[in-house]
Length: 231
Image 1 (cartoon, rainbow, N blue to C red):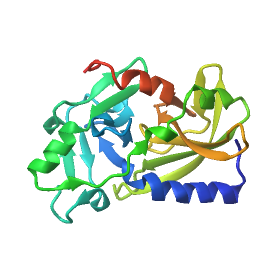
Image 2: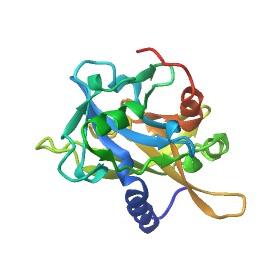
Image 3: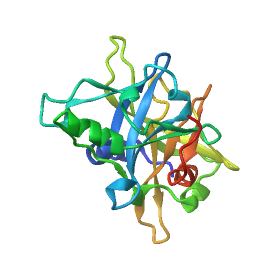
Image 4: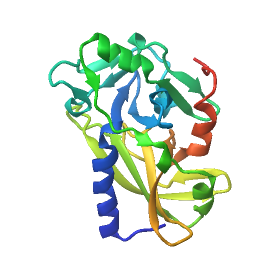
């Protein structure tokens, strides 16, 4: 669905309110991107951190922590090294996805005397196959929540309002995104069978040139309960 500019701005603002604290900057020794928390169900065991497989696996990977995602104030470190988290990232290169079960993140926080204060993307808005099927060759509005990279090296939370299309099984953001956006969640708005508008998390941004493939949530869900991937 292609929204008018005012509606797009309203959606972008709302996304920052409801899932802004799901989003974290991620970097490896040779790349930068974004990761996000996803809650697969009511059970906390179902919580995972998601990003693109191409971002993880290299030495020196770390998550940066904004003050708003931890409590109490002033206790958490500025960044968490991926090497300190067990179990670590599971990579699924064929799908472009990397998954980090968050038990290790919560354990790390508890050992340091602090807690995560995040807003995971909830399972109820993860796009099912019917949402993907409603996409087509006509461009629709897409919203990417990511930590971009400023000239001074800072990583603010940003919302990019883009266009998304589907060609067969391939779903793409039609323009090339700035550094830091790979791994970030992509959201769309669609009308259901009653005509009511609903917000969906379509998937996550994969690397691309001139545009970006999207790893849709049907692919993500297929690997979430799987055994550890190619790490």
